[in-house]
Length: 156
Image (tube, rainbow, N blue to C red; front, side):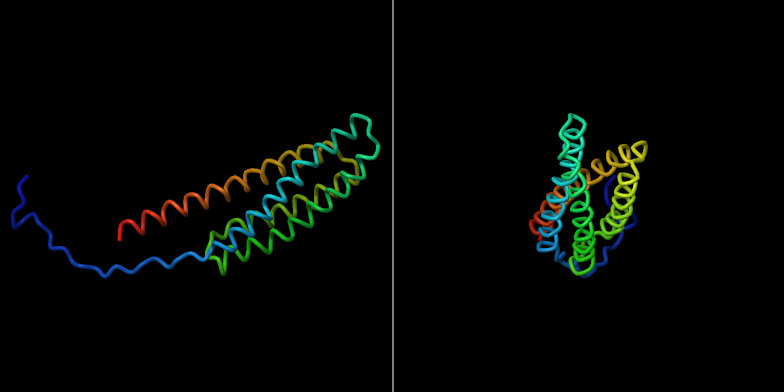
């Protein structure tokens, strides 16, 4: 179809306003470090539990202290995800997800102390999977952000 006066729409030049630049570099690094520490701690917990089941009586101490450290790290993660969201202009859902992890890890400690293994074990599996997935998301998010930033800069 050949363009004619009737089928050509006039284009209105809209001023191009650049997107506000995300300020996530420092907050993302803090998030990545805290998530990395949290991931290592959470993955270590089943190792201590397995060592206990294998007959190492001292492993219960490591498992208990490790659980408290995991929960403490999750509280630090709450602060970091809020900083990532508000001043850093990152997405807000990680802060909400981390609050959910705080509740889950608190319940996990309670169920472990009460020896309710029917809940303690599956909840532990869910926590490990969630924290590992959260860490993978953070790495992939930064890679995707770098790609879109480069694409935006090359389009100018």
